[in-house]
Amino acid sequence: MQALVIALLLQIMAVEYLIESRGLLHPYAILVPELLSGLAMLVVLVRIMGGGRIAFNWRYGIFLAALLFTIVFGYMVQDVPDGAMLAGARSYLKFLPFFLLPAVHRFTPQQLHTQLMLLLVLALAQTPLALYQRFVEFADRMHTGDPVKGTLTTSSA
Image (cartoon, rainbow, N blue to C red; front, side, top):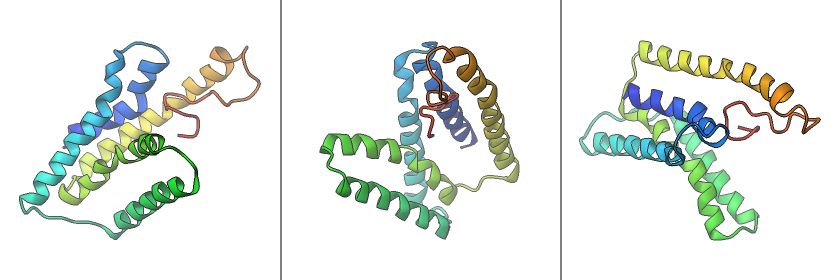
């Protein structure tokens, strides 16, 4: 389970950047988050069907309700085609199984520490890359920091 979480963190924070911005990986590698998410959903479903312990914290319920509220009311308020709505919902829902993993698998404090340390290292790596993007890569084409996004997919990510 730990390897699955680590792989997803690396995929989110680095692989998409290496594909889209640098062209260092095959374009089909962009589908890895969906594959990892499908694998996580299978793990969650197998554990639930196997009668395993389910420790669903009330905070997850609030998160799921807020997420579904955002998707449903965003679709209702805006006049968008159904295909665009499904594509947008896909970007929201593809990581949902990873929020459900703690309900069926108990991570040890050491595993949580490892996950958070990896996330910290990946987050700290954003700063030098963002400085490079701002002052070297995009220095001659812009006067704002809008295109600066580090390894994330958008500057608002």
